[in-house]
Length: 237
Length: 258
Image 1 (cartoon, rainbow over the protein chains, first blue to last red):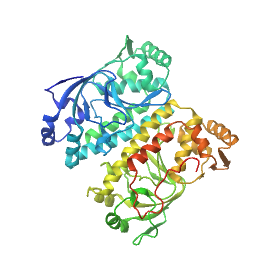
Image 2: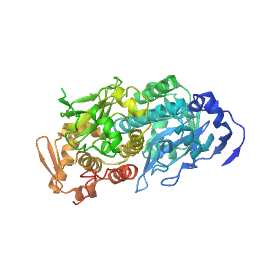
Image 3: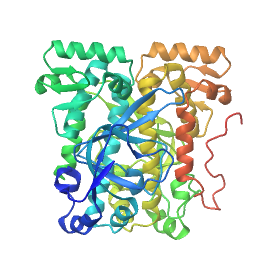
Image 4: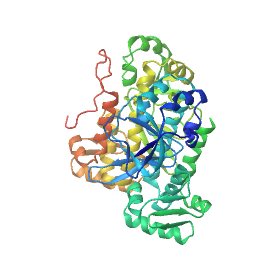
């Protein structure tokens, strides 16, 4: 991870919605960092030192089971932040959060950010609404994982990830995608071929590119639309 | 309809874990504004996106939160029992939630009107702090269940779900139909019937029409995926050690084998 000084908070939609005065007070405490793939924002059962606001990276909440299998329970892009447990007074959590798609994020020390949250006011109200959005979106993901097929889930996943990093190009291997979706790599490969044949995506050498966004939205389960609507409701509030 | 009684003098010590963890002063302020309610099986407490009118604190029984898809398919995303409260959206500044809340195991509880609840939350006192901790445990439960739904087999998920329902409802005899369980797990009913049959043959449960009785929780624990213990421990870690000394029976997610 490398750190630099300058940054604009406006690249993260959640930060951009914070009241100007409160954001200004926090500004000196932010640093911009580059996160590489697999780098942790939250290590399970260890104190959460920083809260991260993705700018161009995508963070992922991954649940790892004892037998080594794992599946993603949620992702965090420029619409959000890692570190909800800190706001909820739990300074650690058994759930890891790590970098799924490398890129930049703004980060701030957990105690500094928590102190600003504890002051109340508009900042706390916005963050509380964000926490509620995360719970609702997580609830949808829980149902989606139980009910929907690999292909529609993969379309949803590609769209959400694309929104999260603000790019039509996503750097990720089939293997990685399989881990996130909790399916075998062969299913990801088969599904990717079908989406490619339909002209919706290109997928080569660990790079997925969305070619036909509207087509992908049609092929995705309703959970993409529902999730997106929740975030829009948050940002419109 | 609800049968409601105001408890100017609380008729019983609240058996809800959040209420019982409040300091006396806070509870005394809240008590006159709590209504005692009966929660009959199948009663819908929240409908998706409807304005929320009450926050519920279950004493007995459980409330299930489900996500309903456009085609009517439905799956449970969380359970609320006496360890918690139904009403996190109001705590977090929202007026509604795109989920359904339905009584899963009939019981009793207390409820409070939304405006009164918000007034109390705005004091930034103990109730708010306790519920934010509860929100954290609920958040972890949801995330764990999301992965569990993807990765684990029906029988392991069913065992996990039965044990969780047992802890929340504080009873071994769960009045649940196969149909209901299949909706909760987002699977076909035939799969539930088959798995319950195997549990029955293994001496883990007893079944009667519309009822599942847990006989061997430890055995069920051995079948369950790790998600049961993981979520239970998280609830205990986050909410642990908060029961008032006056509370007769602090919430213990019934130890296996007991």
